[in-house]
Image (cartoon, rainbow, N blue to C red; front, side, top):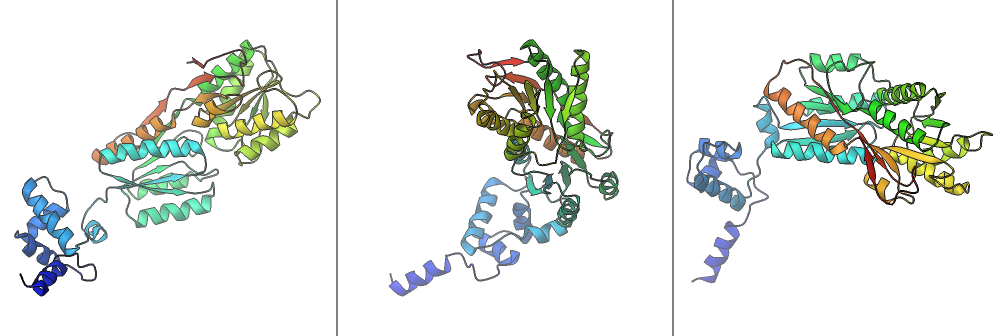
Length: 360
């Protein structure tokens, strides 16, 4: 065989990345009609498997890249969902988004994840941008002080919106998925009382978000039911490990400090454990500490952290599933899904326990 002819054939058979390949050229190369190629690229089940494979092989050979952006302009759906969280650094949201992604993958949808940083202005810009990208639905964990008008505006757009873990206003205005934080707080307070504690403080955020209000309401109800005086310590909306460290150092320097702390989340609780160690106090003995979320790190701390399990992966699955249900059957009544919580008891509240046990 002529070496030059062999070389020419190999070059022509390579992907032509520098050339714009048309549907007509792709159809000719695959030996099918242009409409058949279009059906294959849209993943239509109407095309036989062998034909689909022949078209995809031709696409790889020619270096054809499907312009999904142009295709979605001709379609009512983009198979994408916007996911807006307020604190992307919190491990809770990592687990929640994993649940969302798992559910969407099974439905051949893709999530677009953005973080508002708890800023209402940034949140508005992000939601506007997601709308410009024509997402089919929105999963929203709203920033603190989000106006109720935002939910109404999204509804006016005809965009299904699921509020997740936080909601705007006193009660959810539309679809909502969350965890039964009140019941979790009740279990935590009851457990601490069983351990002999009476000075039990709740360390939370500003008190303005629905997440703060749910925690305060559950805690207050449980303390009052036990005839104990509530001790709610609100602060900034910084709910990090550093914030837990700093605030615990301040709280424990009081003349009569609490003997138990329930923190807004596991990050703050882990910071509280560090503060107690710095003060020469033994967590679980001198002061008990409870977190919320039961993140992976909770069980790995020293001492291991007792925590209210909110099951973020399951919440993500439920939220994504509800969004897909809204897309399949629009116009239904607003749904509210609240998952149960449990208390995972570890050494930070019960140093004598050699193993994990659960209160549900």
